[in-house]
Picture 1: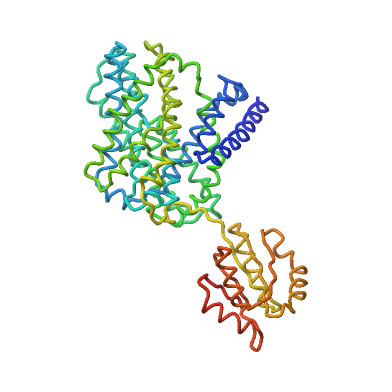
Picture 2: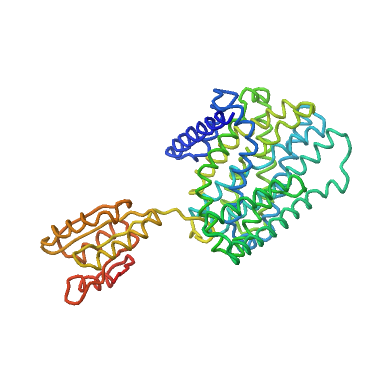
Amino acid sequence: MVADIMLGAVIVIITGFLAGHLVERLGIPRLLGMLIVGVLIGPHALGWISGDLLSLSNEIRMLALTVILLKAGLGLDKKKILAQGNTAILLGIIPCTMEAAVLAISTHYLLGWDWTISWLLGWIVCAESPAVLVPMMLRLKSEGWGAKSGLPDLVLAGGALSDVVAITVFGIVLDTATMGSTPGLATLGAIPLSVAGGLVAGLVAGKLLTRVLYDVGITRNATQDLLIALTAAVALVMGGDKVGYSGYLAAMMMGFTIVESSEVLARRIRAELDRVWVIAEIFLFVLIGAEVNVSVVRQAGGSGIALLVLGLLLGRMPGVWISTARSTLSSREKLFMSVGYLAKATVQAAIGAIPLSMGIPHGEVILAFAVLAIIVTAPVGAIGTSLLAPRLLQRGDVDPTKVTVEKKYRFLVALDQEGTAMRALEEAAQLARQLDATLMILHVDESGGAAPFVSMLYDSNRYLISDVEHDLVIGSGNPVEGIIQLAISGDVDMIFMGKGTPSTLASDITPKVLEQSPVPVIVVS
């Protein structure tokens, strides 16, 4: 059993990574490649994933989804959300409700289903997918798209609330379908109680973690911070199912509370989460794809496509525009948001088969509609967001306190025969190790006469930088001009130079580079 699980995990990681990398090179979001390969290697196609691994699929996807929701919470910007008034709340209620209503009405009159079953289908299909939505919005934040208006933050906040509404009302309608009772006021009150409970649980957990991890400092490094924070987030999600609050909302709220309480701690956890997400992302989307049975989609047929289109065009999209009517978002931003909210996957994969398992009429067709929604909307939402962002959104400054900014640093070290130059090389190498940066080691002099000595000096001290990616460039000419020109053309982030000693050439060159260089210069004495 353990061997089968390990083999299945290896297959998921390898195929998911390769598929994601391939489609990303084509300009398509990598999650789409992972979804597709999940369908192909899943039990309904090639069957490469073992049944033992699939039996743990729900738990693994829950862990991965918790990672991305915590990551989303750590990136929310309160000022930008509050600047749009109650728009986030409206986005969490109106679009999904209108889509569910359109689907229910259409199903009742076009297919002749009972009202209760029609509403059950509507609340299954209307939920956005946090697994698709959150990574897309975090990518927009990291690239600065919609930064000024805070559009990604609004979508993240509204999406979290929307899923709470959809899942909670689905449970209420499901009880009505199985027990035949009309929900009372206490039952209908489950939605605000679920939301409030999730917010309070996340707030308390975030405050407690900040106190323990940052103020008291019981951990030694960022990895330990992540271990405790992620354990707390998982506990919140699992506790939500038992207590009755929204666990996913609580996990996001915990991250939001941490970033509001201590941006230093938030940065540490966020950086470690980025590394965990590399693997979690693969498992999440490949296993979602593995749940898709393409043959089931045939049961939905053309009517399924028609219902989806009606729900999106007459329900969700108008709902987005109504929700944002009083906001400062432009028409282009509202149009983009309408497309961004299309994607469905996680919720449909989780609850789409429940009516069938409980013997509810039309359960097979409901499952087929849920699968069809994943196949159609997840690619459209992911690709549409990627293609439309540069066309509909304005690019602003990236806030490094709310999102990890990926950057490949390049340092230039001006090397000569002076001892301080070697110390500059040591300092640059030490920083390069921490940032995984590239070093450009440069020596330039008027005659080139010192080049052999500098090369020998470099060879004898290569062990200092053997584990750092670097290049050695030796040339002749004006040293000041050579250093500055290479720094600019090589897109260098910082120049490291030795201070030199009185009456040496370095002591004359360094001040000139400091004065003339547009690139920051670090002088090591």
